[in-house]
Image (cartoon, rainbow over all chains, first blue to last red; front, side, top):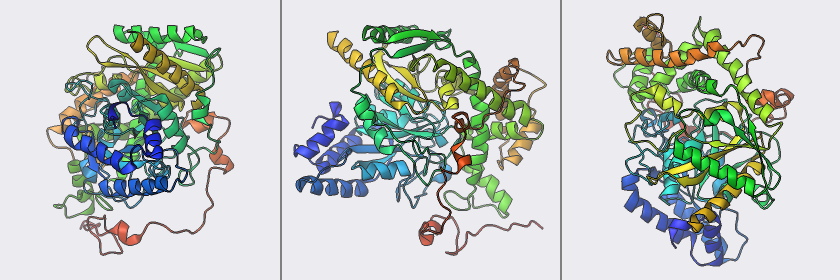
Length: 484
Length: 108
C-alpha cells in the first residue's frame, strides 16, 4: 500500500476487504520507520511483539468475516508520556530511563480494544515541557517537512510521525498547546479535547488542571474517529466527565451553513507572521462562502494568558514532579548515603534544565510570601480568561484563529531565551486554561514551504461543531490545492 | 524587568532546597537570570485589578457546579485487584521484594 495518503478509513477498509492484512500494514510501517526515522527521530521505542500479536488477532477476525472494530489494523504511535504495559516510559527524561510500567493508560487500552496496532513510543519534550521538542533527553525530533526546523512541542514526535507517515494516527498530550502547535508546524490535524473528555489515567502528570490527551491524524475525519474511541468516562480518572460522547463522525455530515464563526481580534495583533495572517484570512473568507456567519469578537485578557499559564503550570508541575525521587522506579543516584541526599542527587542527575527551571519557578510561586502574589493572582486571572471565552461563545459557535505566531522555527533558534520560547504559545495557552476544545487544521504553507495551521476553538464539550468547521476548512484547502 | 529587587542567588538556593534539587555552581546564576526574566514577564498580571474575582483551580467549577461535589464522578470505594506486587517491585532501583529500600533516613 502507498502509505503517503493512507487515512484511517483506507487502512481499516483495506484490512476488512482483504486488500492487505493488518500484519502486512504493520510491517510496512515498521520498514518505513527503520529506514527513515533515523533522520526524523520521532520514535523512542518500538513495541513490535505487541503490535504483531494484535495485527495477527485482527487478521484472524477479518479472515473469519467477523465485524471489525473502528480502528481495526490501524497502526498508531503513542507519545512517551502515556504508559504502555511493558514498553519503556521515559517522558523524554533520564529520570525514568529503564522504567517499564506494568499497566496501560486508558486511552492506550481503548485504542487497542478498538483494533489499533500499537507501533511504539514517541519522542517528546521532557515531561511535555517545551515548544520545540529540543528538551528531550534523547535528542530532538526534526520536522519532516523541513529538516532544519523543529517539529514543535511538546508532542513533536507524535506530529512528526504522522507527517512522515510512520503511523496513521498518534496520541499526544496538550497542557499549553502541545498538540495544536506541533500539528501546525508539521502540517497535520491535532485535537485538544475539552478538559475531562478523555481519561488521563496513565498519563504522566505535568499540570493536572491543564493536561489533556488527544489525537494526531492526517484528516479531520480520522481525528473524529480516534477521539470517539478514546473519549468518555473512566472510573480511574475522577476528572473524566460523565457526559455522553457525541457521534463525532456522524456529526461531520451536518452542514456548516449558518454557523456563527467568531474571529478574536487579539489573535491578529503585532507579532503575527504576514503569511500566516493571510492564510487565516483565506480560511475565514472560505467559511463565509459556504454560508457561515463571521463576527469579530474580543477576548480582552488574551495578553495575560502566558504569564497566567507559566505560574499555574509550573506550580502544579513542581508538585507533580516531586514523585520522581529515585525510590520506586527509574533512576537512583548511587553515591548518596542519606535519603535526602539521594533525592537531591537523583533529581539533579535525572532532570534537564527546562524541567528544573519550571520546578524552581513553581516552587517559588507557591512558597511562603509569594503564594497570593503569584499563584492566587494567576488563578483569578484564569477566571477572567475563561469568562472571555464564555462571553464570546454566547455570540458565536466556534472561534477561528492562528495556532502560532510564526511557522516552524530553526533548531537552536530559541533555546537560549525561555521567555521567547514561551511566547511561541501565545495563541494556544488561553484555550488550555479555559478548558475548551480546539483543533489545528492545515491551511496552506508559506512561500518557503512551511506548513501553516488554523485553530478552530469550540465550546466546552462541543467537539462536534468544532470538528464540523474543521472539516469545512479541510475541504476548502483540498479544493484550493487542487485548483492551484 | 526588575534588576535588584528580583530573585537573588540566595533565593535560588532556598527554592532549590525546597524542591529537593541540587544545582551546580554553573546552574545557579543561570537559573537566577531565567527566573528573573520569567517573573518580569509574569509581573504584567499586576496590571489587572482582581479584587473580588474568584480563584479558579480547574474548569469543572465553571461548568454549572462541580461533578466531584455531587459524587457522580467518583467510583465506589471498594476492594478490587490492583497491580501485581512482584511486577511493581521489579521496577524499583532497590527492593527486598516486599519493600522499597532507601538509604538511611535519620542523619546522625
